[in-house]
Length: 143
Image (cartoon, rainbow, N blue to C red; front, side, top):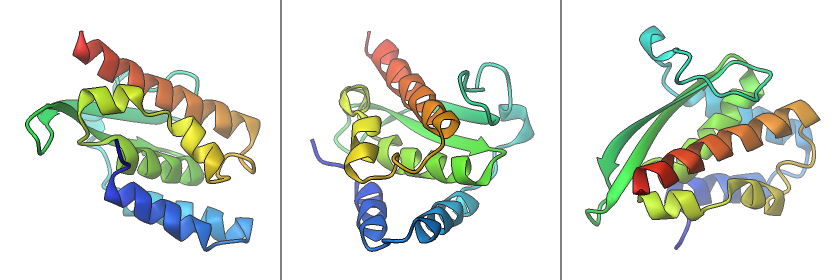
């Protein structure tokens, strides 16, 4: 299983940025590029528990290009850096087959990219909560 092109592009761009302020700016830009959720999607069911910031993730059943069942994600946060983390997670997970979503550990990938080492504990915990939510939804849709 390979990572989606959008995520690979983000990982490559981050690898060129040595300065953490530049990485934060890049995350913020990614987050600003995400479309806003409809206010009707900001429901308790879509809210991610375990995040200090407000984070909503919306999943919709879909099909991957190869015809396997997939999930497409949309998301939003009220915090700029967390919104950027949401953008990276959507690039990694959205539109992929359920098996790949459930089997992809974004936290490990973030660690490999060195993306988590400068996050506050609260942001890191929120990232883990978002990843767990996404993977749990995919696993539940598989069964």
